[in-house]
Length: 66
Image (cartoon, rainbow, N blue to C red; front, top):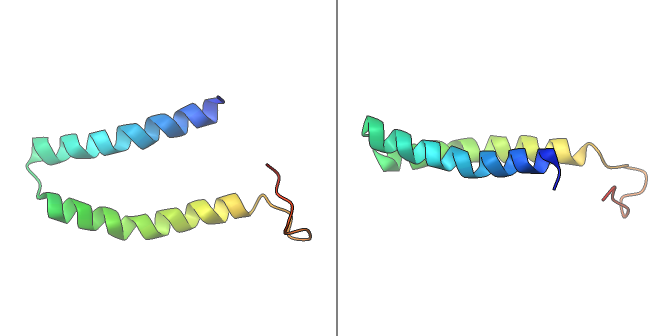
């Protein structure tokens, strides 16, 4: 596995744990935290898809860089 993959794995597991810890420590309402997360999910995924799409050659749409 590459270093970038490990970083993404740590972020993917660490951020939800940090969020749950914040809910518990600061006694936040879980429903408001989940709603805020869903609102942020759309633009964040859009940016990730745009970043991933920019690396592909548009002249040959059937071939990907792998």
